[in-house]
Image (cartoon, rainbow, N blue to C red):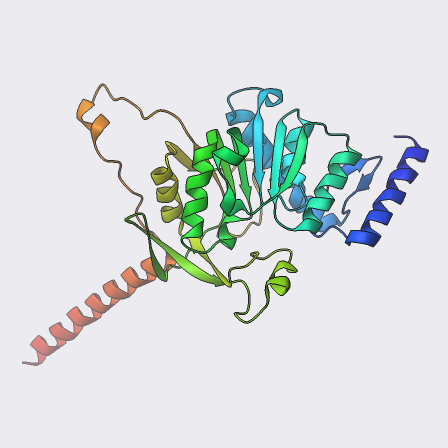
Length: 311
């Protein structure tokens, strides 16, 4: 990009910021060294996660990206969907906040992306009838902003539109304090604060990194997230640890879910029709509870032995 175009892009970006405010999350290179946000720490963190999401998509989409239709749920300022669009994918972003939508559209227009669009909607409205089917669905940083039962409903809706690959980047709870039920199945998680109960709809919408309306959300345990994905129809679920994200909190994980055909087993044919097993809960709270129970048993045994010795 020559200096004239670079200066023009910087001018247009500044005019946009004056109207809509600065970018709050996504560091998109628009060309000529111009970024939507050039904060070094944010740029460093974003680049690592973009590498992970993009690599997983390239490896697991099952076809070249220029043949892929992708969905970026709650796309915020558009970074992950725009990255896939720059690789040739046909991308639809869904976002509810108008300021985020404006920023995603500005970046897409600056990059002249003809296969990228953003629609204003609530992710809880996702359906095949409205949006069609997608080879790849990205669910980056939204699942933990949903309350129950919405979190399970959105997982079910993602499964309904996804034909191949779902990538989730989310917080998972290592402390279990709530029992949850959806469509007759049990799950575990932890309630998390989002908004003060008396705040208005406008006040809640003005917080760019919070839920759009619910006062609290639920972080599912990793086992319950696995179970919910399996219950929704995904046949393989696993953690994505490479490319690595050094220093990341253990309660933030990238989860890969693939939708395929259930395996027919030949060596153990009876297992083919058996009900699927569910992942065991292994939360910190559960571990502490088990440790406390064992400690109590040991202490009680010692007390009983002391009593016998004194007789």
